[in-house]
Amino acid sequence: MGARMKKKYEAGEATKYITRAQALKKLQLNLKDFRRLCILKGVYPREPNNRKKAQKGKLDKKTLYYVKDIRFLSHEPLIWKFRDFKIFMRKMKTAMEKGDKETVARLKDNKPSMKLDHLVKERYPTFLDALNDLDDCLTLCFFYSTLPRDTKVPANLISLCRRLTVEFLHYVIAAKALRKVFISVKGIYYQVEIKGQPVTILINHLRGFKPTTASDVDYRIMTNFVDFYTSMLGFINFRLYHSINLQYPPKLPGININENATDEDAVEEYNELVAALNTSLVANVPEAEEELQIDEFPSAEGEDKLDEAKREAEAIERLKTLFKGLKFFISREVPRESVVFVIRACDGEASWDSSIFAGATYDETDESITHQIIDRPSVEKQYLSRYYIQPQWLFDCINFRRLLPVEDYFIGANLPPHISPFVTERLGDYIPPERQVLLALERGETLPAEEEEEEEEESEDDSSEEEEDSKPKKNDTTKSQVVKEKKGMKVMRGRVEMPDIKGMDEEEKEHYKFRELMIRNKDKRLYRSMMKNRKSREREAKRLENKRKFHEKEEKTLKKSTSTGKELTAKWSIQPLSSTTSDTQIKKIKKDV
Image 1: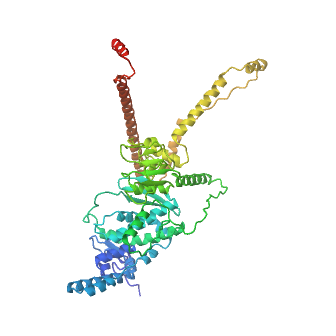
Image 2: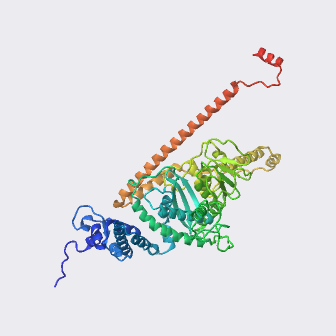
Image 3: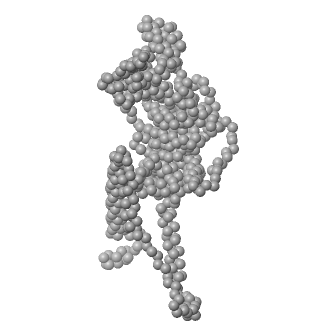
């Protein structure tokens, strides 16, 4: 007997997928609970290779899921929690309609709660898996922590996000884990290194107006993500604090408060002191820090990589103590939290006016302040013992990993361009001069100003040597008279043969054409598109380079015109005569005129 023939859509693509309506019927959930369950478990819709086969011949576009994912969801105990909550809401509704206050109070006391701890362990088996997904978690938690209380978001969730994000910022400060910063229109990007893993965070700007309304953003869907991310961030903070020997939850030195305290004002005041980010946290047991050194293995191939790793380690160590010994005072118009976080993460001291926020450690009148961060065109009272600079200086110093000259960041000065350290350049891209300086510093090279000074010193040394060589020497002439050449014996000076650069270029082009001919036919289309994109990038780079040259030329002409105008006004301005000049001198001046 032959094998039974399979009917159409009984195997292959059609058996792998299931529609959303079929999944709802199988799980016996409504659409709201199904969406929430999929978000918490990390199950998302899938796009099939052949939609007609996956939908069993139907051409209308439907939302499809893997069958194995829906089977996986059917064993989740959270489904029973959703059903318990549904029963709870039905009982509450009937009790409130009847006016039975005792039943309402009893039901509120026995309200079903839902824990997501097992989901964190299920989705992230190792700690590195959780760190890989930490970017979205922190970005969304920071966004929720800045929401006003009148949005359609639970107030306790906003306060929880605020507490967890402040704890994470304290860890970054204590571990000196900040690596890169960039200010954009969306917010401030921070790159943090945790266990050798780079984590990029976007913290939105603190604005004075209300965010978008509930009609523009579906806060219910986002709140489902935040419910899971708060549980995840709590576990991560606990692990990170114990890795650097800090107490969790964070405790301030010299201040004791009970976790179960009933006085809300005292708890709120303590939380504000923690959120000030201005004091170090209490450690469990002080441990002696050991200086880690890179092991050296003799290998001819990896010497360049070893040198690069050494330079990177030295730059990171320098970045950790970049602001050590500097005292900053932050003016009231500057965003306090971001500036304090950046300063403290690089071992600096910061303070502000005590009327703005709690936790200020010193006043503006302190003479030991070295820098005052200010973002206004002028200041009424200035101290000679400190620099008055704009906030961009802090962020540029971190990206360059050294203290930059403060002259370009004074009050009212035109600031240099704020270059992003997150951009990776490809072949043919335009690289502005400021970015070239940043890349040179990452490679361990010196600044262009330092190179120019070194070149000037070398040129001076060469000129002095040439002057010494040009002086006539008597000994050489006497020796030439004594030594006589023999007939038929000559030693001619050798000539340096110049390489044929043009011929070498032509030969290289021919080799390149031969390599192009060796490309397979099915890869030629991809190669052509790659070369087309490269040529377009080169054209764009040339256009931007010409634009930069034109802009610099315009700036030079503008400076010249302003300088000549100042000289003319200074030359033809009426200067008042001094009080010591007598009447006879004034008469003489009038006669001369």
